[in-house]
Length: 169
Image (cartoon, rainbow, N blue to C red; front, side, top):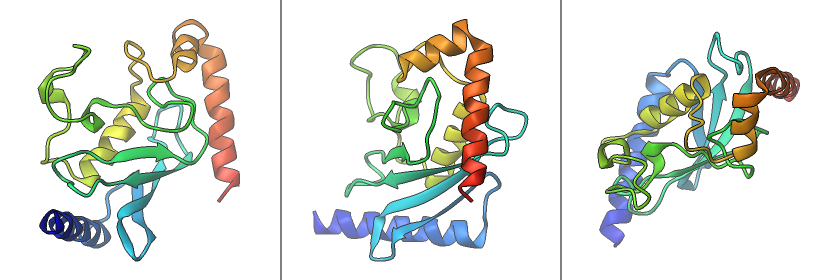
């Protein structure tokens, strides 16, 4: 077990170092606490030409001790209204689901977590999620319903969140 933890720790330190040397447009990442490489603070900038454009959304990414064999969890700490984000802020996208077959039969194993994913690929998937909500398998049923049936109300709510996130800077 100790070997797994040190392997995971080394991999996460390398990914953090790579991101600091080669920042990626659309987000920034760092450790919540310098003594814990398993918990990251991520700020995602709302993607251009989307409802979230211009927003600054904070999230915590928590990695398991057996990373990269198991996925991290990602939870927005900023208020978020999106069909694929639970009310408590947890992100629900396929690549964050445990590897293997989906017990509910919604996802292919190839769509779920694999150890080749990195912090960068995870955050880019979340940015993509913001651009294209999946209302077929929602984490937030109310947001999905509003997205489908009352798009103008959905847009107004998201615009308020974007403004709120900008005021928090």
